[in-house]
Image (cartoon, rainbow, N blue to C red; front, side):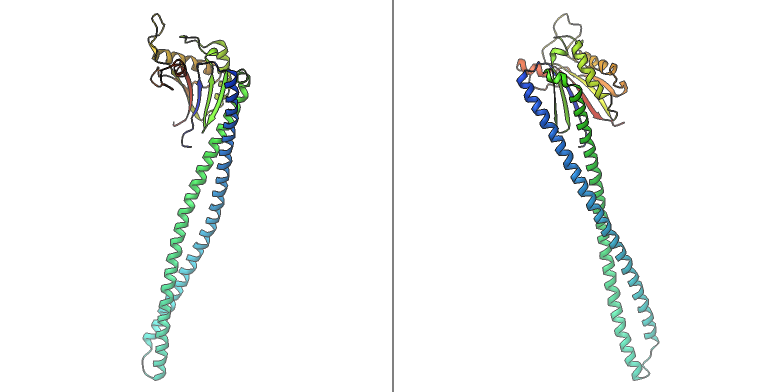
Length: 305
């Protein structure tokens, strides 16, 4: 999983009891899906490590074969040199010497053939050893990637379990729902406990829920946290204390950041961003869709610095 995103969405509508029960089922299904991915990554990692070990042994055997063939080749070349010297010194002074010369010439031919065969075998073995080295490197890379994916899945599962455990009361009351899909963790907090209409101040019950969320975020040290405010496209009314939806979303995001920091999140790791109505989650064509667009998101991204 190249980047892991933990998105905490503070939504804007109350959640009926029936919908709450369906979302609890989704929570259980999501948790099972995460565990399935984790088990698969673990199995793939074990298989890759086993293949890596077998290829390493084969590579060692080939390396030994190359050394043996090279030694044999050197030995044959030495014999060939020696026989050649004897052949050069041998004249044709007698029939016996002529016969010996023929035998030596035949031996030279055989030695040359054996030397060429040994050379070809050594080249083939060296080529196979290089191929196995490349395969071993690929397996090692795959094993490292699977280990990273496994660690990411384990982290997601841990964070998911911690949030569910800390927010059990709010979940049972239908105030908060938690879902997880493909490594993306989402916490939805109803607008009834977060913001009053047009307000930038978080309600006491919303603050209490955010403080529980902060209890989990404070323990996550390897990611940056970005709080993003969003609104619908309804223009700001006259007499408001902010100029437009952009400022409204920024003020709400900043308010959430302050609560999270006061509850233990490191201020070095967190930032507030206001997007106004320019990043809608749904078309602003119905009352329900506009409610979806009035949201605050807490996004955890991998730390690059």
